[in-house]
Image 1: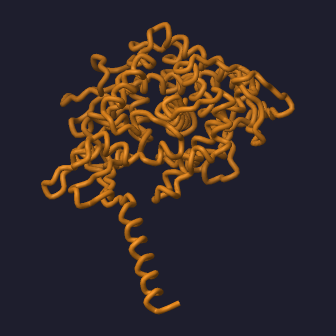
Image 2: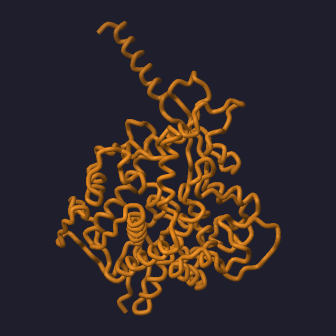
Image 3: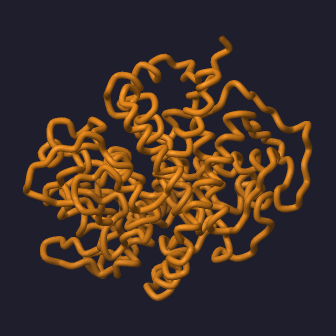
Length: 455
């Protein structure tokens, strides 16, 4: 090989690498300033007085480019066209606008299912493919049940997912074979979400069409789908994926951590689960009820927080989406490359200069009075123009229903034999009772179990 040819090859490879690297998304800016976070989320943050040339929906879709690749979806998180994105949101709104009768039905369903799992246990996940809820095929030999040892993360996952199926897909699978498939789907979603977020290059993102386990889990429950817009994950990801993690931590906080010695918190959540009305949700509040946290400059004292205040504090401390990313392109000369700006919502919720020296402590009573700065910093459901439609009612109240249902059933079952926590990693148990903020990482409590006392 001539030296000229070798030089040419080296130069060509170098240029190719430069092009590839220049097209990667780069996170160069992260902020926990509430005002800047709202600008980032809206896609309107400026750079040296230059506006973002990407539309707000383009900024959102490009930052979420891993979702259609990893999950094969097509919804408001992935669509660059504002009209189609708005159509998806309008499709969702009727599904989450529940009547009083529907709220009562969901609550009863959640308590009945939780009671069944606490009493009888639920099956583990068999990785061999297994039975199909959709086709009604069952194999009892594949179901493994431990009635005295229940994985808490799996319990929160399967409860949240079953409620989503009940509301959005009108499915109420009852048998243990279906539980097995639901757990497989929940764990597949969690696995893919983590792996897709860790990849910086598009070619490294795991592809939906190559994930046999995820596709099998979906097909076993819903049957086959051909188009991204028909993918059940379009509805499942925005609801289940964010909900189960906060349900898990709120349950742990109220029952085993900060609220362990505060019986009133449990009683309040149980009362709401049994009577899931707006009035009950806000019972115990010291001010007139509203869908927004109260902002006041007056002083007042509240003996016990309402279910709403407990849920709001859970949303503050364990925000469903810790960081919100948007793509930014400042001029046409950037070509296909763009920068990623990150709104640190978790950081906004933990700032001691906004929330006080106890910002990392679970304290529902802080919601009896909210300063204007705290109101601006609280963004668990995003902010305009991309505010989650579940913010006003569905999201907070559904969290309350599920947490209250878990607490209600556990309290009832403890009258016979108490349930305790168990984990091979003793540091997890020590941290739970330390009074400190629970670990926010996704898999922090995957090895934590409820264990029934045999005495």
